[in-house]
Amino acid sequence: MLVFLFGSGATTFVLGQNIISNQKYVSIDKSLEIPSIHFVNMGMSGTTGAYNPHDALMMAKLPKKQDKIAYSKKMIRKRLKQRGLLGYISFLIRKQGYNTADGTFGWLGEGTFIFTKTPASNWKWWAQTFTYPAGKNVSVFRFINQLIWISLIGILFFGWKYHDLVSDGLRLSLIGGFLFLLIFEGGRSRYLIQFLPNIMILIPIVWQTSKETIAKILLATGLKKMEVSQNA
Image (cartoon, rainbow, N blue to C red):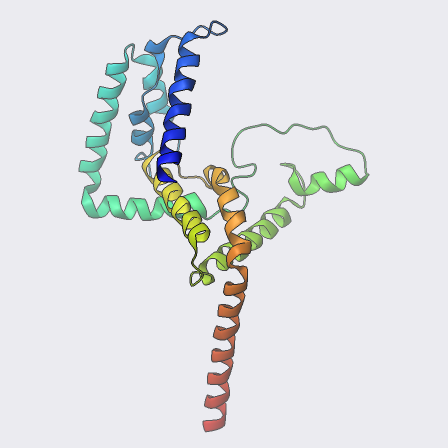
């Protein structure tokens, strides 16, 4: 299975690169390519490792790819030196929180992609009050989404005892996703959207185990309270 996965992945990558290199539809200037290390550098910037306008502008200003790589390496060394080992570990813990904490996945958190005139008083208007920037019920939308997100994460957490090939594979993929977001540009939960299929598949798999674990905890907590009250 591993040979098949790596083989098919490598074959797809090689064929894809070959098609891109030989296509005539779009003119590609490879000298303007932004190296991957740039996104590693941005992932270490600021307090959350989010998008950094200055670093992005430098990628446009520097003429050669090697200059872009040299600048990114220089900034990585600078930021590591400024934080130190313990400071960098603290930064990663804080960044992981920003990567995963927002149940709305950054809804309306950036950009100006929703514009609307005052809608008519019909069902569209009612729906827009929950999702549009000026909607009076946007806070309700955020609150409900956060409750759903906490519930889903809780199911994953309490379902840790369930193990099989599929569930462990999905857990491993989520760990890989978290590490990816810690290394590269992150700092916002909207990047987690690409890993939602893994989460949504894993939740029903561990649901029964999670429910049983929660029931045992509640039962144990209730019995202890009864014992305390009886002894009193």
